[in-house]
Amino acid sequence: MSEVTTAETATERALKRQREAGAPLPEEEVERVTDMILAGAAEAGSVEEYVLEYVKELDVRPSRPGMKSAFWSHGIPHPDLPPDQVLSNQYIAEIWSEDENAIEKGAARYLEGTPGGQLLDKLHLWRREVQEVLLLDEASGNALARKAWAALSEQYAKSVDGEAIAFTATMAPWSVAYETEMPQLRKVTGPENIQFAYDLPEDVLKVLPPETQQLLSDGAIRSHLHFFAPDADNPPNQKYWAAGYLDLDHLRSLPSAEAQRAAVLEVCARVAQLDGRDVAAEQFTEEVLSLRTEQEATFPGVEEQQPAAALTEQTAQTSPALKLQQAPQAQEQTQGPEQAEPAEAPVSGFHGVNWMPGVAVEARQVVVPAGHSGPVEPAQTLPTPAKAHSTGIGE
Image (cartoon, rainbow, N blue to C red; front, side, top):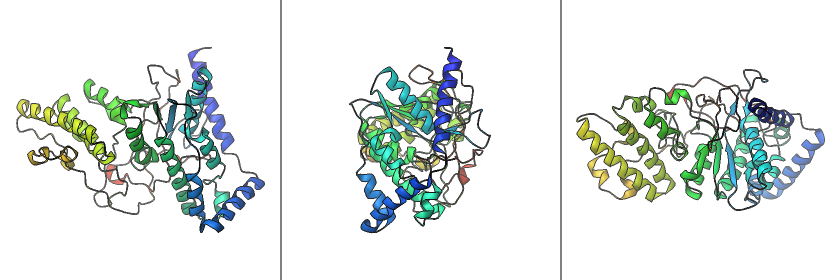
């Protein structure tokens, strides 16, 4: 079988799963799940209280030690789909897990395939027909579904004891992948064990020297970063949004690869501080200080710090967790309805093996709710940083 045929088979299998999952629910299935939820809600006090208590009891632990764990966010275009639809990375992750397990039984897993993920999926919380019976409007129903899947995703990430494979190119700061899963993964399995299935978009890497491109492409570094500027006039409520933002225009303006490395590692240090990974924060900080000392000697008078996180002599003498100036704490704020999305990226392989060889498509990122089986939202162009807020109903 040729490489191209193999690649087409993987994506076509994923597309078939997505279409099957998007089929209308039988009336008896809607009745079954809503009767269950309403009965539970009568005892728990509300639909939300019941659902979240239900999630706490679900089992998402690996079936054997050291399993590879798939994570996903957004989706990619497919030639058999209209331009306003994408193939959700949920189903790509599912097919990848099956292929890994066909080679070695029990080698890999994905959230929706765990016992707990299967049970939560059977509540069909994203389905409008279920939400209507529960007397939830679309916004409230989607908010409940997101909250339930985010809670299960956090449990899933906490259970990882092996390698994590992220099926996404760049992460939106409002997504479950970035805000909930990555912080847990960095703590429980370590950034060095986080890999990405897709290359970074060319728009991210353009103009940057090879050393900086290599640094940004490292999974351990990528797990800390995003590229959406927080809006000071409409501050996001996500904990990591401000801390994890890397200004690419500022990065490109720096005079050397060493100065760019310092700017990237400074973001990593801020995120490590929020994680509570003080040793990692100290290590990042020490390298940043060393690099900037060298740069000051080489390029005297050149401003190298990102405006929101400048190092000073005073902060450098404080405790390791405070050596870098903290990014402004995000304030609670109701986000507007606008859905933004990360930039495009080519589909590629990982671990030195192209799992989907011959697929010449762009991994265009769109917002796809975790556990969502229905149609996905149309892809949009990358917004200006000031408009990069979202209600965040999906990954």
